[in-house]
Image (cartoon, rainbow, N blue to C red; front, top):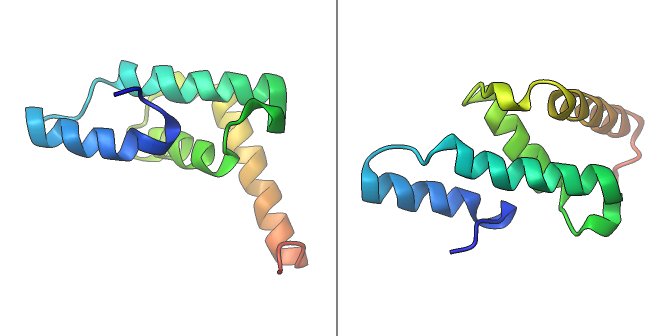
Amino acid sequence: MTLTLANIGQYEVDYRMTYGTPPPAAEINRTVLGAFRRFRERGKDSGVDPYLLMTHIGDALHRRRDPAYFGEPLRWYARTLQHWVHLSRTGALST
């Protein structure tokens, strides 16, 4: 199975069921941080879903407390979250 942002959750469940432990962080980090780099370099043209990226970076920061995400991923996460909260308060996200 090729690990992508879209199937990390299922991969984690399958791995836990098979081996009884969480998957190695290095496998998850390679995928998430690789997607983060592509998104930072190419933006919307990267093919990376920013909502999935936020989900996985947030999970790494809040649940796993993974130091690999400190630095630029953390700063991007905080700025993006702040921007989204601002948009929701101003009504810019209403449909």
